[in-house]
Image (cartoon, rainbow, N blue to C red):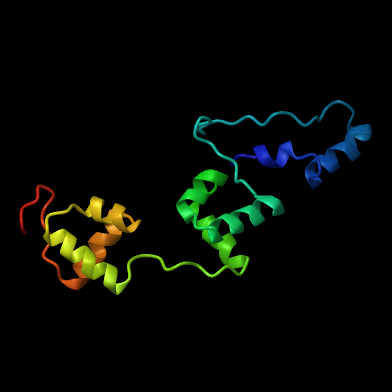
Length: 149
């Protein structure tokens, strides 16, 4: 378990206890940098909390047209956290995925020979979303080399 965050904050109960006990314990106990082993420090990220100002900016930018993926990258948080914050703020989420009309158009584009990636790019969704929606519609899918299955 990594105690990095708990030891770095000076107002935690543990640090307060240490400061109160110092006069009785002398120099035997002192808060020090935690020794971390078995953790890849390059890829280690602390959980990031957004300030109220940042949360307001996130809501404003979402309502201005940015999607959850863009906001997640910008604020360095997970996209699910972005969605959760927006829902908590009472923001109505935009339609996610593809509408029935878009699925029809995607099926036409796919049958014309376009790739799932290009279709996804066209509609602003992931290629996997396109694939799932076309499969639900019963569209005959090509293999990865473009041949009919």
